[in-house]
Length: 193
Image (cartoon, rainbow, N blue to C red; front, side, top):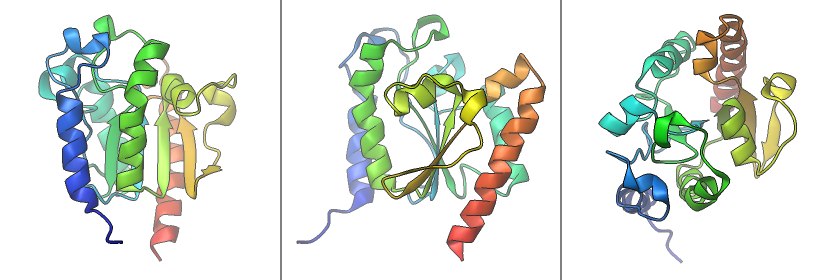
């Protein structure tokens, strides 16, 4: 049986996300945020959800934390233009940038699961506690306890780290995120050989 074109499937999924009305988050959004990056990326970065800038532009991580993330990725010769796909747990901005409610995550997560299936990354980086807990369903551990450690799941390597926005509250987090991105870049290069 011939496989369906994943690019065509991703385009269909994107259109579905952009028009989604499955949960109350769509009522206040300007634009849903599907994600961004090459659709054949071997690395996927997953955050919590769109903020105000992302909601206006329909692009993930374009505010202050996004600019920091881009700079840290570039130090490792990684970028959303070349080899990283960036997505979020929820595709619409929660009001006042609050943490997404469990029901919102449950409603939106199948979109992310399908993005992962179609893009088929080898490495997934989870940014922050909400992304980590939402991705794994429930987790009592803190990001600080398991950041930088690989978890093998369905043939993929998954690693949590701090969200770049945490750097604006505590500058020390930048060093940890950069260490984790360095580990990811090393593994990426190793897998490309």
